Image 1 (tube, rainbow, N blue to C red):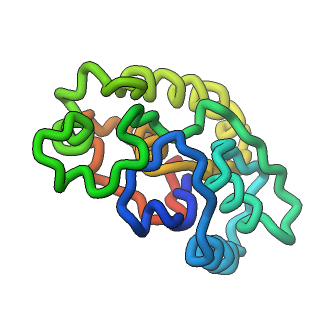
Image 2 (cartoon, rainbow, N blue to C red):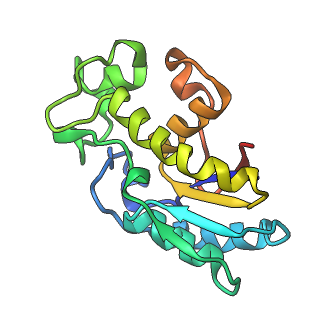
Length: 182
């Protein structure tokens, strides 16, 4: 089976800042969330955990797997979507005509990414490549958890469940909630 989980909370989550590829650690609430998830999902047998190399995801995966004999493997393709020059921006929705808001409000029309950002095509290509590599493991009966980020996780969910881009943000994914995909 294939499972997915978003990292625990960070200070930037609490401040409603766009994180993207900026490497922000978990805060104490995020660490507590990861510990609680480890207890909540202790009965789920996992063979492998793949995660983003960004510290908030890696720390979540390590806390979650503590005391269990599960390899944690980082993969650059699982990094969060790049939000370019808008990373670190607080409450972008409160900024009139902020270009990065098209990404969130109208994903189908986010054709050209903001400066230094990433397009949906780029995001889906890299996460699709990752999915192509792990699907055979799932078919062989391996239980795999992906620990990642909001947009990156949603790109995987959309591909697995054939959700159209216009509905990209509709499924949402809570911090430290494990969701079964396959």
